[in-house]
Length: 67
Ligand SMILES: [Zn+2]
Image (cartoon, rainbow, N blue to C red; front, side):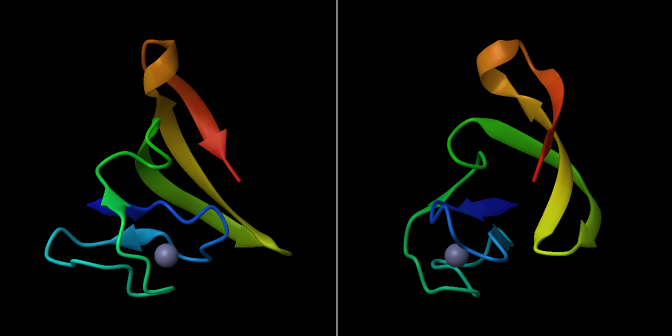
C-alpha cells in the first residue's frame, strides 16, 4: 500500500503498483501516510471525513485514529 502525500486528497490509498495517485494525480506516493502513520484499516465514513485506524510511527507505533 502506498499513500498520497497530498493533505487534501480525498482518497490517499493507492496500491503498490501505482506510480501516481489515482484520486488526485499527485506523483509523490509514500509507504507511510503523511510520512508518519501506518494505516491498519479503514474504519468508516461520515459527514465530511473518513476515519482510519493507524499506528503513529513517531510515538513507538502508538495506536491512533486518522480523520
Ligand atoms: Zn491523492
